[in-house]
Length: 108
Length: 119
Image (cartoon, rainbow over all chains, first blue to last red; front, side, top):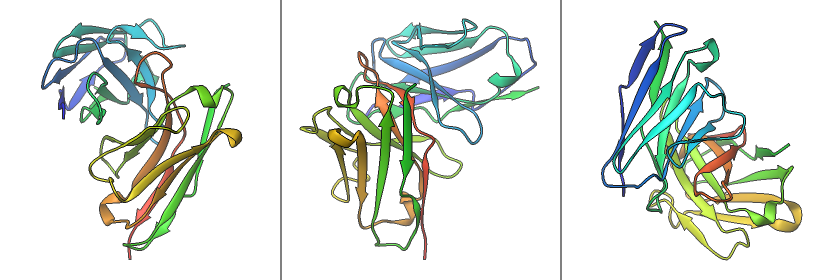
């Protein structure tokens, strides 16, 4: 199974600042990576698919990059509603679909 | 508007059974693969099972293989997860999710249903 490793576990950022989240795959997954946001008490929401494509209704301040084994989610200017958990997921080789352990973005 | 609404969760004793349901609306359900993902308390996301749009193919996580069965009723726009031999480690919120039409990630999620396995 492909292991997805996210870093850091927690990211403390001030509103309006940029946040950069990382995800590493244990083997190449091409660009078959998605990013999800999960606010407390809510279901996950798809943000990014195919490593770089924003899902429907996702604001332009969210962007994804990377290929192979290294991926990044960037939030250009954090808004209050962006403080949440973020998960990466690979869908290059399945089953199983595998998720990273998550990065918590908190208010600094 | 796409909606996925799970039900059927609850408290069950170890070794017991439970059947989860997911009612879909707002899209052509029988054109999409569907999946179940769970989240244990304070933990991350774990894929559980998925099913092809016509029900002809299914896959399971090793942790549930042989105990859980995923199924669907396209006439009723419904997805199911039959769970047997439940263990404490199956305690989680269970989400149904729709697979993206073109990519095998999950583009719509329900709000989840809580399953607690405890004596």
